[in-house]
Image 1 (cartoon, rainbow, N blue to C red):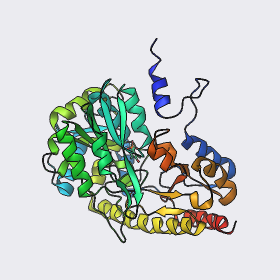
Image 2 (cartoon, protein in one colour):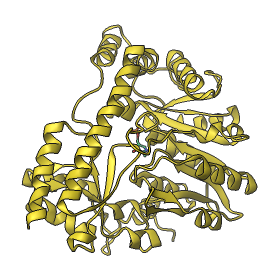
Image 3 (cartoon, helix red, strand yellow):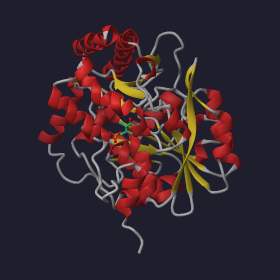
Length: 408
Ligand SMILES: *Cc1c(COP(=O)(O)O)cnc(C)c1O
Protein backbone atom coordinates (compact mmCIF):
# COMPACT_ATOMS: atom_id res chain seq x y z
CA UNK A 1 0.00 0.00 0.00
CA UNK A 2 1.25 3.49 -0.82
CA UNK A 3 1.96 5.48 2.33
CA UNK A 4 -0.24 8.57 2.80
CA UNK A 5 1.18 11.74 1.26
CA UNK A 6 1.64 13.47 4.63
CA UNK A 7 4.35 10.90 5.39
CA UNK A 8 6.24 11.93 2.22
CA UNK A 9 6.02 15.54 3.39
CA UNK A 10 7.17 14.67 6.92
CA UNK A 11 10.03 12.55 5.56
CA UNK A 12 11.12 15.22 3.05
CA UNK A 13 11.31 17.78 5.83
CA UNK A 14 13.07 15.48 8.32
CA UNK A 15 10.02 15.39 10.58
CA UNK A 16 9.01 11.72 10.40
CA UNK A 17 10.02 10.05 13.69
CA UNK A 18 11.10 6.38 13.83
CA UNK A 19 7.80 5.73 15.66
CA UNK A 20 5.86 7.09 12.66
CA UNK A 21 4.75 10.13 14.63
CA UNK A 22 5.53 13.53 13.04
CA UNK A 23 7.90 15.69 15.09
CA UNK A 24 7.58 19.45 15.60
CA UNK A 25 9.85 21.56 13.39
CA UNK A 26 13.10 22.87 14.83
CA UNK A 27 11.61 26.38 14.42
CA UNK A 28 8.81 25.43 16.83
CA UNK A 29 11.28 23.74 19.19
CA UNK A 30 13.54 26.80 19.29
CA UNK A 31 10.66 29.30 19.68
CA UNK A 32 9.36 27.20 22.61
CA UNK A 33 12.86 27.17 24.07
CA UNK A 34 13.03 30.97 23.80
CA UNK A 35 9.63 31.32 25.49
CA UNK A 36 10.60 28.91 28.28
CA UNK A 37 14.00 30.48 29.02
CA UNK A 38 13.25 34.13 28.25
CA UNK A 39 16.14 34.12 25.76
CA UNK A 40 16.21 36.63 22.89
CA UNK A 41 14.54 34.86 19.96
CA UNK A 42 16.68 35.37 16.86
CA UNK A 43 15.34 32.11 15.42
CA UNK A 44 12.15 33.01 13.55
CA UNK A 45 12.41 35.82 11.00
CA UNK A 46 9.65 38.32 11.54
CA UNK A 47 9.99 42.05 12.35
CA UNK A 48 9.18 43.23 15.89
CA UNK A 49 8.02 46.59 14.49
CA UNK A 50 5.07 46.78 12.06
CA UNK A 51 5.21 48.41 8.64
CA UNK A 52 3.98 51.94 7.76
CA UNK A 53 0.95 53.23 9.68
CA UNK A 54 -0.51 54.55 6.40
CA UNK A 55 -0.64 50.99 5.05
CA UNK A 56 -2.22 49.62 8.24
CA UNK A 57 -4.77 52.44 8.04
CA UNK A 58 -5.56 51.55 4.41
CA UNK A 59 -6.46 48.01 5.55
CA UNK A 60 -8.59 49.31 8.44
CA UNK A 61 -10.33 51.75 6.06
CA UNK A 62 -10.97 48.92 3.62
CA UNK A 63 -12.69 46.89 6.36
CA UNK A 64 -14.78 49.92 7.36
CA UNK A 65 -15.66 50.51 3.69
CA UNK A 66 -16.94 46.93 3.33
CA UNK A 67 -14.09 45.00 1.65
CA UNK A 68 -15.10 41.94 3.66
CA UNK A 69 -16.44 39.38 1.19
CA UNK A 70 -14.60 37.12 -1.29
CA UNK A 71 -12.46 39.22 -3.61
CA UNK A 72 -12.16 38.12 -7.29
CA UNK A 73 -10.33 34.78 -7.71
CA UNK A 74 -7.20 36.22 -9.36
CA UNK A 75 -7.06 39.17 -6.89
CA UNK A 76 -8.64 42.65 -7.01
CA UNK A 77 -7.87 44.59 -10.21
CA UNK A 78 -6.17 47.46 -8.29
CA UNK A 79 -3.62 45.08 -6.76
CA UNK A 80 -2.96 43.21 -10.02
CA UNK A 81 -2.42 46.59 -11.72
CA UNK A 82 -0.12 47.78 -8.92
CA UNK A 83 1.96 44.58 -9.17
CA UNK A 84 2.23 44.98 -12.97
CA UNK A 85 3.29 48.64 -12.52
CA UNK A 86 5.87 47.58 -9.91
CA UNK A 87 7.44 44.96 -12.21
CA UNK A 88 7.56 47.49 -15.07
CA UNK A 89 8.97 50.36 -12.99
CA UNK A 90 11.64 48.35 -11.16
CA UNK A 91 12.66 45.78 -13.77
CA UNK A 92 11.23 46.75 -17.15
CA UNK A 93 9.06 43.61 -17.13
CA UNK A 94 5.68 44.14 -18.76
CA UNK A 95 2.79 41.88 -17.73
CA UNK A 96 -0.91 42.16 -18.45
CA UNK A 97 -2.61 42.64 -15.05
CA UNK A 98 -5.66 40.66 -16.21
CA UNK A 99 -3.92 37.57 -17.56
CA UNK A 100 -0.34 37.56 -16.34
CA UNK A 101 -0.61 38.55 -12.66
CA UNK A 102 -2.15 36.34 -9.96
CA UNK A 103 -2.63 37.31 -6.30
CA UNK A 104 -2.02 34.50 -3.79
CA UNK A 105 -2.11 33.78 -0.05
CA UNK A 106 1.49 34.90 0.44
CA UNK A 107 4.49 33.66 -1.48
CA UNK A 108 3.95 30.32 0.29
CA UNK A 109 0.73 29.57 -1.59
CA UNK A 110 2.23 30.88 -4.82
CA UNK A 111 5.12 28.42 -4.45
CA UNK A 112 2.82 25.53 -3.54
CA UNK A 113 0.37 26.17 -6.39
CA UNK A 114 3.24 26.59 -8.88
CA UNK A 115 5.03 23.38 -7.97
CA UNK A 116 1.75 21.41 -7.78
CA UNK A 117 0.70 22.81 -11.16
CA UNK A 118 3.94 22.19 -13.02
CA UNK A 119 5.73 19.16 -11.50
CA UNK A 120 4.70 15.63 -10.63
CA UNK A 121 5.92 12.06 -10.22
CA UNK A 122 9.00 11.42 -12.40
CA UNK A 123 9.91 15.12 -12.54
CA UNK A 124 12.82 16.69 -10.73
CA UNK A 125 12.59 20.10 -9.10
CA UNK A 126 16.03 21.64 -8.67
CA UNK A 127 16.64 24.14 -5.86
CA UNK A 128 19.67 25.70 -4.26
CA UNK A 129 20.86 24.07 -1.01
CA UNK A 130 20.43 25.19 1.74
CA UNK A 131 16.80 25.92 0.82
CA UNK A 132 13.72 27.56 2.38
CA UNK A 133 11.96 24.79 4.29
CA UNK A 134 8.61 24.87 2.45
CA UNK A 135 10.28 23.92 -0.86
CA UNK A 136 11.01 20.34 0.24
CA UNK A 137 7.45 20.00 1.54
CA UNK A 138 5.65 21.16 -1.62
CA UNK A 139 7.93 19.15 -3.91
CA UNK A 140 7.01 16.07 -1.83
CA UNK A 141 3.31 17.02 -1.97
CA UNK A 142 3.58 17.12 -5.75
CA UNK A 143 5.18 13.66 -5.71
CA UNK A 144 8.21 15.06 -7.55
CA UNK A 145 11.89 14.52 -6.73
CA UNK A 146 13.90 17.27 -5.04
CA UNK A 147 17.43 17.78 -6.40
CA UNK A 148 19.78 20.53 -5.28
CA UNK A 149 22.82 22.61 -6.24
CA UNK A 150 25.04 23.81 -3.38
CA UNK A 151 25.83 27.30 -2.19
CA UNK A 152 29.38 27.15 -0.81
CA UNK A 153 30.93 29.50 1.78
CA UNK A 154 33.97 31.44 0.55
CA UNK A 155 35.58 34.89 0.71
CA UNK A 156 32.70 36.42 -1.31
CA UNK A 157 30.01 34.84 0.84
CA UNK A 158 27.96 31.78 -0.08
CA UNK A 159 28.28 31.38 -3.86
CA UNK A 160 26.65 28.96 -6.28
CA UNK A 161 28.98 26.13 -7.30
CA UNK A 162 28.55 26.36 -11.09
CA UNK A 163 30.03 22.92 -11.85
CA UNK A 164 27.76 21.29 -9.29
CA UNK A 165 24.83 23.26 -10.75
CA UNK A 166 25.52 21.90 -14.24
CA UNK A 167 25.88 18.37 -12.83
CA UNK A 168 22.56 18.67 -10.97
CA UNK A 169 20.57 19.15 -14.21
CA UNK A 170 19.22 15.96 -15.80
CA UNK A 171 16.74 15.22 -18.61
CA UNK A 172 14.08 15.00 -15.85
CA UNK A 173 14.68 18.50 -14.49
CA UNK A 174 11.30 20.14 -14.98
CA UNK A 175 11.50 23.17 -12.70
CA UNK A 176 14.36 25.21 -11.30
CA UNK A 177 13.25 26.96 -8.14
CA UNK A 178 15.61 29.87 -7.50
CA UNK A 179 15.54 32.07 -4.39
CA UNK A 180 17.35 35.42 -4.53
CA UNK A 181 18.03 37.27 -2.26
CA UNK A 182 18.48 33.91 -0.57
CA UNK A 183 17.17 32.67 2.75
CA UNK A 184 19.05 31.42 4.79
CA UNK A 185 22.48 32.47 3.39
CA UNK A 186 21.75 36.14 2.56
CA UNK A 187 23.33 35.64 -0.88
CA UNK A 188 22.15 37.86 -3.73
CA UNK A 189 22.88 35.83 -6.84
CA UNK A 190 25.09 37.74 -9.31
CA UNK A 191 24.72 37.97 -13.09
CA UNK A 192 27.16 35.14 -13.74
CA UNK A 193 25.28 32.78 -11.44
CA UNK A 194 21.92 33.79 -12.88
CA UNK A 195 23.20 33.47 -16.45
CA UNK A 196 24.42 29.93 -15.69
CA UNK A 197 21.00 28.99 -14.32
CA UNK A 198 19.29 30.54 -17.36
CA UNK A 199 21.59 28.82 -19.88
CA UNK A 200 21.12 25.40 -18.26
CA UNK A 201 17.35 25.87 -17.95
CA UNK A 202 17.11 26.64 -21.67
CA UNK A 203 19.41 23.74 -22.58
CA UNK A 204 17.26 21.30 -20.57
CA UNK A 205 13.96 22.97 -21.49
CA UNK A 206 13.17 23.52 -17.82
CA UNK A 207 10.91 26.25 -16.43
CA UNK A 208 12.28 28.65 -13.81
CA UNK A 209 10.38 29.71 -10.71
CA UNK A 210 11.91 32.51 -8.66
CA UNK A 211 11.20 33.38 -5.04
CA UNK A 212 12.01 37.09 -4.74
CA UNK A 213 10.30 37.94 -1.44
CA UNK A 214 13.45 39.83 -0.32
CA UNK A 215 13.75 41.76 -3.62
CA UNK A 216 13.83 45.12 -1.78
CA UNK A 217 15.90 43.96 1.18
CA UNK A 218 19.32 44.14 -0.46
CA UNK A 219 21.73 45.54 2.13
CA UNK A 220 24.34 48.25 1.62
CA UNK A 221 27.95 48.64 2.70
CA UNK A 222 31.10 47.13 1.12
CA UNK A 223 30.27 44.64 -1.63
CA UNK A 224 26.72 45.96 -2.13
CA UNK A 225 24.82 43.72 -4.50
CA UNK A 226 21.95 44.39 -6.89
CA UNK A 227 18.88 42.23 -7.18
CA UNK A 228 18.40 40.90 -10.71
CA UNK A 229 15.17 38.99 -11.47
CA UNK A 230 15.82 35.92 -13.64
CA UNK A 231 12.92 37.01 -15.89
CA UNK A 232 14.98 40.02 -17.03
CA UNK A 233 17.71 37.81 -18.56
CA UNK A 234 17.59 37.41 -22.37
CA UNK A 235 14.95 34.86 -23.40
CA UNK A 236 13.93 34.08 -19.81
CA UNK A 237 10.64 36.05 -19.42
CA UNK A 238 8.83 33.40 -21.49
CA UNK A 239 9.91 30.49 -19.24
CA UNK A 240 9.99 32.14 -15.79
CA UNK A 241 7.37 32.58 -13.09
CA UNK A 242 8.32 35.29 -10.60
CA UNK A 243 6.95 35.14 -7.06
CA UNK A 244 7.01 37.85 -4.42
CA UNK A 245 4.89 39.10 -1.55
CA UNK A 246 4.10 42.06 0.69
CA UNK A 247 5.16 40.42 3.96
CA UNK A 248 8.91 41.07 3.95
CA UNK A 249 8.91 44.28 1.86
CA UNK A 250 6.39 46.13 4.02
CA UNK A 251 6.89 44.37 7.40
CA UNK A 252 3.39 42.88 7.45
CA UNK A 253 4.27 39.18 7.46
CA UNK A 254 0.90 38.22 8.95
CA UNK A 255 -1.11 39.62 6.05
CA UNK A 256 -0.15 36.88 3.60
CA UNK A 257 -0.62 38.73 0.33
CA UNK A 258 1.64 37.41 -2.42
CA UNK A 259 1.69 37.32 -6.22
CA UNK A 260 2.95 35.49 -9.27
CA UNK A 261 3.83 37.17 -12.56
CA UNK A 262 4.76 35.55 -15.88
CA UNK A 263 3.48 34.53 -19.30
CA UNK A 264 -0.24 33.79 -19.54
CA UNK A 265 -0.14 30.00 -20.05
CA UNK A 266 2.06 29.52 -16.97
CA UNK A 267 0.04 31.91 -14.79
CA UNK A 268 -3.17 30.18 -15.96
CA UNK A 269 -1.70 26.82 -14.91
CA UNK A 270 -0.90 28.17 -11.43
CA UNK A 271 -4.33 29.82 -11.15
CA UNK A 272 -6.01 26.51 -11.97
CA UNK A 273 -4.47 24.93 -8.86
CA UNK A 274 -4.53 28.03 -6.65
CA UNK A 275 -8.29 28.47 -6.99
CA UNK A 276 -8.79 25.12 -5.23
CA UNK A 277 -6.25 25.69 -2.46
CA UNK A 278 -7.42 28.89 -0.70
CA UNK A 279 -9.57 30.21 -3.59
CA UNK A 280 -8.94 33.77 -2.28
CA UNK A 281 -7.67 35.54 0.83
CA UNK A 282 -7.14 38.88 2.55
CA UNK A 283 -9.95 41.00 0.99
CA UNK A 284 -9.12 44.16 3.03
CA UNK A 285 -5.36 43.63 2.78
CA UNK A 286 -5.36 43.54 -1.03
CA UNK A 287 -6.28 47.25 -1.47
CA UNK A 288 -3.84 48.16 1.33
CA UNK A 289 -1.00 46.36 -0.47
CA UNK A 290 -2.01 48.02 -3.77
CA UNK A 291 -1.68 51.37 -1.95
CA UNK A 292 1.70 50.32 -0.46
CA UNK A 293 3.08 49.36 -3.90
CA UNK A 294 2.09 52.73 -5.39
CA UNK A 295 2.70 55.25 -2.58
CA UNK A 296 6.01 57.19 -2.83
CA UNK A 297 6.24 57.70 0.96
CA UNK A 298 5.94 53.95 1.47
CA UNK A 299 8.64 53.40 -1.19
CA UNK A 300 10.93 55.74 0.80
CA UNK A 301 10.08 53.79 3.97
CA UNK A 302 11.18 50.54 2.26
CA UNK A 303 14.51 52.10 1.22
CA UNK A 304 15.02 53.22 4.82
CA UNK A 305 14.17 49.69 6.04
CA UNK A 306 17.00 48.29 3.88
CA UNK A 307 19.42 50.90 5.32
CA UNK A 308 18.35 50.14 8.86
CA UNK A 309 18.66 46.38 8.24
CA UNK A 310 22.21 46.93 6.95
CA UNK A 311 23.11 48.67 10.20
CA UNK A 312 21.44 45.95 12.27
CA UNK A 313 23.26 43.27 10.27
CA UNK A 314 26.57 44.96 11.11
CA UNK A 315 25.64 45.12 14.81
CA UNK A 316 24.76 41.42 15.01
CA UNK A 317 27.72 40.28 12.84
CA UNK A 318 30.13 42.18 15.12
CA UNK A 319 28.56 40.57 18.20
CA UNK A 320 28.75 37.07 16.70
CA UNK A 321 32.39 37.58 15.70
CA UNK A 322 33.23 38.93 19.16
CA UNK A 323 31.68 35.77 20.63
CA UNK A 324 33.95 33.62 18.46
CA UNK A 325 31.66 32.60 15.58
CA UNK A 326 32.94 32.65 11.99
CA UNK A 327 30.41 34.85 10.18
CA UNK A 328 29.57 35.18 6.49
CA UNK A 329 28.28 38.71 5.93
CA UNK A 330 24.92 38.55 4.12
CA UNK A 331 24.14 40.80 1.12
CA UNK A 332 20.39 40.73 1.70
CA UNK A 333 17.41 39.30 3.65
CA UNK A 334 16.82 39.22 7.42
CA UNK A 335 19.45 36.58 8.19
CA UNK A 336 23.10 35.86 8.89
CA UNK A 337 24.76 32.44 9.02
CA UNK A 338 27.44 31.84 11.62
CA UNK A 339 29.74 28.84 12.09
CA UNK A 340 30.04 27.59 15.68
CA UNK A 341 33.03 25.32 14.91
CA UNK A 342 35.57 27.90 16.21
CA UNK A 343 33.66 27.73 19.52
CA UNK A 344 34.24 23.97 19.66
CA UNK A 345 30.74 22.94 18.51
CA UNK A 346 30.51 20.44 15.65
CA UNK A 347 26.69 20.28 15.83
CA UNK A 348 24.55 23.39 15.35
CA UNK A 349 21.53 21.64 16.93
CA UNK A 350 23.50 21.01 20.15
CA UNK A 351 24.72 24.61 20.17
CA UNK A 352 21.18 25.95 19.63
CA UNK A 353 19.94 23.88 22.59
CA UNK A 354 22.78 25.24 24.79
CA UNK A 355 22.71 28.84 23.57
CA UNK A 356 19.86 30.14 25.81
CA UNK A 357 21.84 28.99 28.87
CA UNK A 358 25.20 30.18 27.57
CA UNK A 359 24.22 33.51 26.04
CA UNK A 360 20.46 34.08 26.45
CA UNK A 361 19.98 33.86 22.67
CA UNK A 362 18.08 31.48 20.36
CA UNK A 363 19.01 30.67 16.74
CA UNK A 364 18.10 27.95 14.25
CA UNK A 365 20.52 25.24 13.09
CA UNK A 366 21.18 25.52 9.35
CA UNK A 367 20.49 21.78 8.99
CA UNK A 368 16.79 22.84 9.10
CA UNK A 369 17.46 24.02 5.51
CA UNK A 370 19.36 21.01 4.14
CA UNK A 371 18.73 17.43 3.08
CA UNK A 372 19.83 15.05 5.83
CA UNK A 373 23.09 13.41 4.77
CA UNK A 374 23.82 15.70 1.78
CA UNK A 375 27.24 17.29 1.19
CA UNK A 376 25.79 20.68 2.15
CA UNK A 377 24.24 19.16 5.27
CA UNK A 378 27.69 17.88 6.31
CA UNK A 379 29.45 21.14 5.42
CA UNK A 380 26.96 23.25 7.38
CA UNK A 381 26.45 20.91 10.37
CA UNK A 382 28.03 23.41 12.79
CA UNK A 383 26.28 26.50 11.34
CA UNK A 384 23.44 28.50 12.87
CA UNK A 385 21.04 31.06 11.37
CA UNK A 386 20.27 34.25 13.30
CA UNK A 387 17.85 37.01 12.31
CA UNK A 388 18.62 40.71 12.70
CA UNK A 389 15.12 42.01 11.91
CA UNK A 390 14.66 43.05 15.55
CA UNK A 391 14.80 46.42 17.35
CA UNK A 392 18.26 47.77 18.24
CA UNK A 393 17.73 47.24 21.97
CA UNK A 394 16.83 43.59 21.36
CA UNK A 395 19.94 43.05 19.23
CA UNK A 396 22.07 44.87 21.82
CA UNK A 397 20.75 42.53 24.51
CA UNK A 398 21.62 39.56 22.27
CA UNK A 399 25.11 40.92 21.61
CA UNK A 400 25.71 41.47 25.35
CA UNK A 401 24.66 37.86 25.98
CA UNK A 402 26.86 36.55 23.18
CA UNK A 403 29.82 38.37 24.76
CA UNK A 404 29.59 35.90 27.67
CA UNK A 405 30.56 33.13 25.21
CA UNK A 406 33.76 35.02 24.42
CA UNK A 407 34.77 35.03 28.09
CA UNK A 408 33.64 31.46 28.74
C1 LIG B 1 9.17 34.40 4.33
C2 LIG B 1 9.48 33.65 3.08
C3 LIG B 1 8.47 33.15 2.24
C4 LIG B 1 7.01 33.22 2.63
O1 LIG B 1 6.40 34.39 2.25
P1 LIG B 1 4.86 34.65 2.62
O2 LIG B 1 4.49 35.77 1.75
O3 LIG B 1 4.83 34.98 4.09
O4 LIG B 1 4.10 33.41 2.35
C5 LIG B 1 8.83 32.54 1.06
N1 LIG B 1 10.11 32.39 0.71
C6 LIG B 1 11.12 32.82 1.49
C7 LIG B 1 12.51 32.61 1.05
C8 LIG B 1 10.84 33.45 2.72
O5 LIG B 1 11.84 33.82 3.52
